[in-house]
Length: 321
Image 1 (spheres, helix red, strand yellow):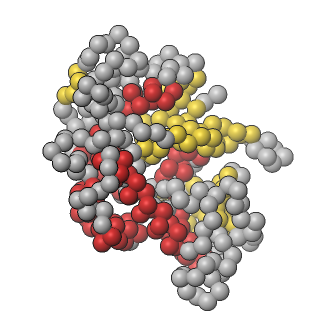
Image 2 (cartoon, rainbow, N blue to C red; image 1 turned 45 degrees about the horizontal axis):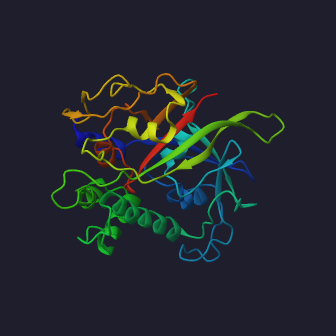
Image 3 (spheres, rainbow, N blue to C red; image 1 turned 30 degrees about the vertical axis):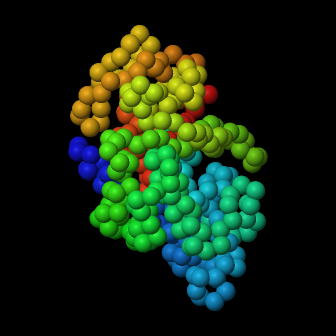
């Protein structure tokens, strides 16, 4: 598969979702893209299930009764992409239950657990802020070339919201160009969501997945000697040899000084001496866009081809007890 095919496949991946209104058990079904956000569906849910969101039939005012979503007693963070939430909370190769059933609430908004949501402008503001932040991380300085000017940002948002891949890609490809004459970014824009099974607060006491930690830090794309770093290097920096991953570990091992490996772009690259994650005492898996990413994948390639529309690589770490 060519890199361009990977980009398009990520954009076009859907999840079937069942929305169940907690008050009256009305249901509606829809396909949502993994790279989308749940607020994109709020108006459709309200229309299908007879929910009133606004006092005056417009979407430019604050919602009179904020809507929020919940799965297995976990309030869903509306500012995270749909696919990231699914991988954190509902991904399960063994069960593979479809569709994803989510409860819809309007009472008792959990403000201590999720951000306030007032209107569609909230998710737009969050998304555009993330784009700017990712651009700064990749370049290591403020964007002085105007690749994230207001007009470009507006085009990106409209294209994502209205599912126009070609329009989005036309603007986004400029954000994927390294600064100046360099062939790589300065740092890797990422978020790691560490997830574990927690006991439910209900009477049944069932265990369910929750996000227990969010990890972010400045991490260079290349080593100080100019060697491209990999996902394996990043994971070792964050967790050392604490976990044994089910992901493929074709890349560097503790006995290698420097190796040549095949990368997702079908080229060769030199890697550094970083232990592989096969001896940890706790089993874990790493997911990006619902797939197990090989640990030898170069961070530069991931930053360009496995990032979300907000230009961050959202990495899900699921730890099994």
